[in-house]
Length: 205
Length: 85
Image (cartoon, rainbow over the protein chains, first blue to last red):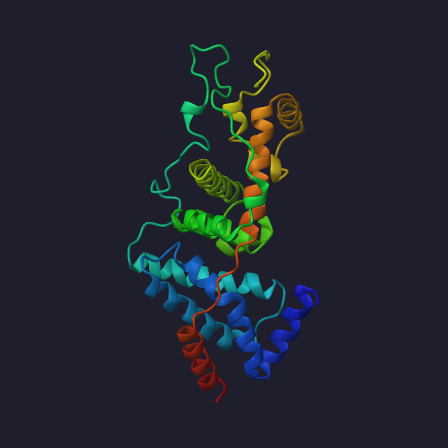
């Protein structure tokens, strides 16, 4: 069943008070809502609360939901608004603060310096990843840890895009980010995960 | 390994690694895209780098998505039953 059709079915069932439909929705989205809320609020507990409030608002508003946007977009819009309000109350700095320091994708030492033969070209080029280990359990743990270490906004973007497989457009809508910002965050996040993998494969050779 | 004979309009490897996401997202002006691809075609290091990023994306996609904790699920289902009443 297409995602769209499944959504329409779930909305209809939810309006009729169907618990199984609600259960399905929270299984699909709750963990992501919490993760996205963490972009704006300072504790896991606060993020859980914001996500729970979002579901209450969904139940209250489901009769008015017209399906002009997707349910997913609507859900994350509600969440983002609530989390922002809550974050402001906590007077926490909103995403895109200087906290998300700009780090080069690859350490500058890996490239030739201005006085060398070909400035800006690799002095220590990368080596191919060992294909057979890419999907190993331990490799997945390395990736999961690297994602956990990211600043919250990068973490949310890479999770939606690369773990959940959302499109760029869906991700921008859900997180109220511009296309450019979304891409910059994705770039930093992917670069960091690549670095973690490179280090891991090198150390365990 | 890395081709060192390059002209001024060519990207350096250090520049290229910062453009990889724009490239993969299809968010690059055509002219730049051509330069990017020209570089990749000649430079083993950058070719490998792009491959690593693709593999990083693929491996990240193999992570299992988090699911709701049992406590949160219980609390939400309680709230749902209240709402339905």
